[in-house]
Image (tube, rainbow, N blue to C red; front, side):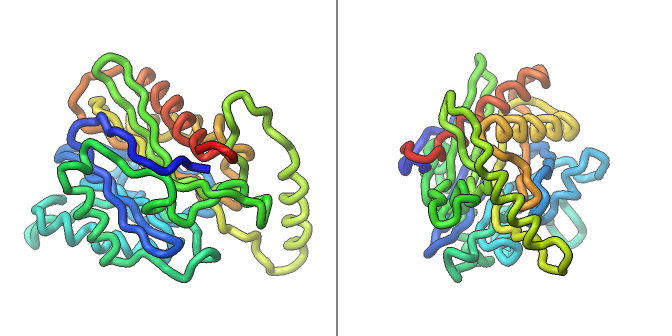
Length: 301
């Protein structure tokens, strides 16, 4: 399971804060002005908000924050509170009516574990926590924020194990990439050197058989979501490729990855302080994501 504790954050200007309640919560990543971002969804059952604005073809160039939340689609309402906090601090796309904050949001399903759902007030409190000075240097991980109700190995049913919120960084000279993930996966998180098992295939086959020939949908109660961020200088296309790298890291650490029962998705952000080669940033992103997810392996932490 994910180790509980605190880890350092080394990407300048980034602050991370949580709001945690019984069985659920949300986590806000605040970015410095001018941060560029994109995203990619590869799971079959995502819950998300404002991801279209991050498409490299769209006109919005910057994002102000990213939000990871429990509560499935209900938890997306917590983004309203993050927007309120940012508007109070004059962050967002300037319009004649004032700033409109850009807060892409990813949700995971933890409703079976708790009736609690992150709401606008929870989002506001998480954003306020992310704005505190210490939130720019230290990060609480484990069963907090968006990871509070997250579990991994959900194919195991009652034998699933806490996934939680995990974080890791990779550094090459002045270049830093951080990977923050909430692990609520259908598949197992692999320990270093662990061989993948095909045991979950029987569960997938049973689910498919149970839902064939009638209108019963496959259960979509899993998801690994995350935010990867760097002090690199990238455009939106570069950030999109960075998000792809995060999914590559997920595929190294979780088996099976990206099932139709998961909503696996990553937001990628670049704060623009360090000129960097895109393939190097993507390589570090793969490593940081796989390392972070490894913290949620069963029996660790």
